[in-house]
Image (cartoon, rainbow, N blue to C red; front, side, top):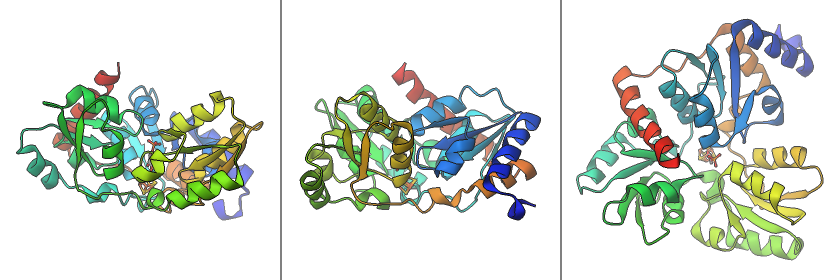
Length: 306
Ligand code: 13P
Ligand code: SF4
């Protein structure tokens, strides 16, 4: 029984089950180090979507939140996509509905669905984007220099580059984990760690983005820290990424801009990952027609990036 198994035994058993069932585990950068340990692939939303589009396995256990697993299922209609916990849902994704997308599109301008949306929302959108490519996608699809993006209003502001107007829908959609960071946190961090660079996620408020040295997706932040000549960093995103940075970049220092935790991401545990794989639960099931339309929006994003 799993409750009498040690962490190491559970990890070993997960490896054995992966082999036996031809399964892989994909994990977002915000997952705990224990979950990251058993992952075959770790990354940001874009990297995970690309990895999901190239899978050879029969079973995928997706350790992240609902919209990420749905994207993997949309790209793999013939595979079993499992999630360890059915309550791991991104609260921001729930802020944009298919009706809101349809309503905005009546104006004739294209709609970019942040990948942090459910498949039913992606199905109504023209294209998807992630935090790694929002400005690029906006430039590629804007009509007369205008497009919509939702649900994260801060990402929409971040994507307003090269004269493109990116209108947020809803007007004030947000992620609670990133809303927690304030300009005062950056000011305090600069006093406490004057030698450090401040790097933040584009879901942070615009003032926080503007006061930072670098703004990027979780994996872009990881690469920035690896490649920068600087040896210490104050990091404005969910704590899981900072734990990954500390473990993988041992010769540099990482400090959280403020300790901010995505409760939903942390609902995946080593134990429920093991049970998901062992009992082949909980399978992501999507309406076939919605999945097909959502896939077009995701694939179009891949084409823009090629
Ligand atoms: P990334 O795509 O940058 O990993 O971000 C995902 C997310 O949920 C941010 O809160
Ligand atoms: Fe959603 Fe924010 Fe959690 Fe990312 S960190 S999954 S956007 S609530």
